[in-house]
Image 1 (cartoon, one colour):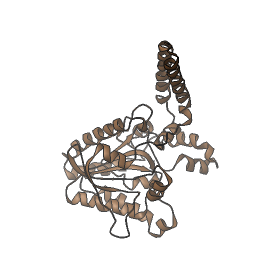
Image 2 (tube, rainbow, N blue to C red):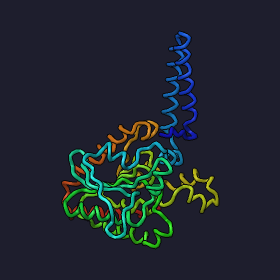
Image 3 (cartoon, rainbow, N blue to C red):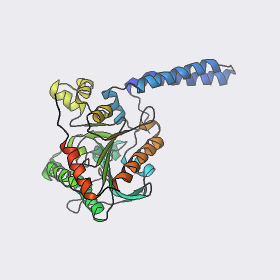
Image 4 (tube, rainbow, N blue to C red):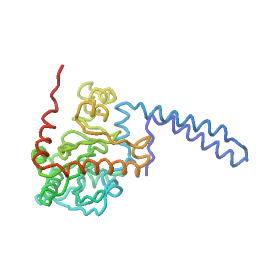
Length: 318
């Protein structure tokens, strides 16, 4: 797996390398360098806490795109059991960028749906870089209706830069597919929990994001447009992406403050890619906790609360 180093992480990597060099010197020359090593390790922990405790919006965006970050199927493997993938939208075909199927989480049978990226060119071409086609959203809706029919909750894991904007997607009505999902998820008569696990880009994310509880991982983002896209429109250059990220208020702390998400799931220090198992455990705990409450809620109350939740968004006072 690619050990991608982000720009702001380089001082940490350099210090880690120096520590490893000291350890090697200590072993090779039989010299006691324990004091120096402990001092540098303390400095490393202090620096790590300072960097990751004060991440900017753009730095969180970079972490959300990390090549080693767990993807949808990784979380399905680590946090869910008994996963059976169901394919096809029964209209056009199957979309590998939007896998889904039956699974269990903490003993609760459910339908789980999400967007899947790839880690190399071959897999990215197969998964379309995590950007679903119309048939992906229609398949997702088919599985949600299946969940409704059998009284199963729906769990949606969001990780997409946006729906695919190509000619084929337009010919097969990508906007209509997303709009129908948003409409029908609002009236789906079963509990729905969605979690932004990486990128939450525009309508591509919202197409499986209308839920009773919307959660987000600590270093994920949720936005109407990517920072680069926003920078290209407002500043006419992608180099202003860090400024755009701040202006968009797309990071988890801002989203929680504005009431656009219902909770933030903590990640291991350095991001989910530093300890995928712990990240999956945190995700599992958060989803299970929400499902325990939602499954006890009468359907009519669930629908009213879901409708009111989204109607309140965008209302503000100066």
